Length: 230
Image 1 (tube, rainbow, N blue to C red):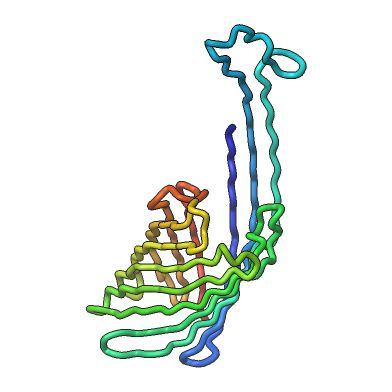
Image 2: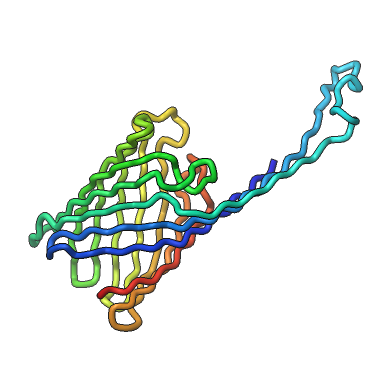
């Protein structure tokens, strides 16, 4: 069986600074899914079978082929975000954040996960030499509809560059303590670049690849974006 599954996502995002320490945001993805599947059935006859002709397919002995395809477009799972700057010191900067993912995308059409999740997490970072900022994000994602799928989420990475051009690298991890042993620990590597070509305009590109082979994931995820601050 061959399965081709292509997902295209166009996301609209906005962030508003409520105070110097608190900002809130929303992300609304528009998702297009295109799926095609092909199957080829065959009978493998054992050499010890003295009556091989007894096995066959309805309508004839040939190996049947079948295929199906479908597509869907719509709003995916909307994400609400809030971040508060807790501490700034010579040794460490600390922020607290909260992500809420709403089950607004159609699960049956593969536009969303079909679950609502809440993820509180901490962001630890420090800028060194004015060009290098290592950071660690650590939190727990509560799955409100499927508690056994709640996960520990962590990100280890860095930003390297200037206000005009920045390179970023991250290791994204997701661990399911209550999982069934299949895809419980997912690791993904992410590399990207951000460029400020004019005033408050920022363009970015990012690539994600699996580090381990657990779970059902794409071999390559590419993301391109543009944002402007007022």
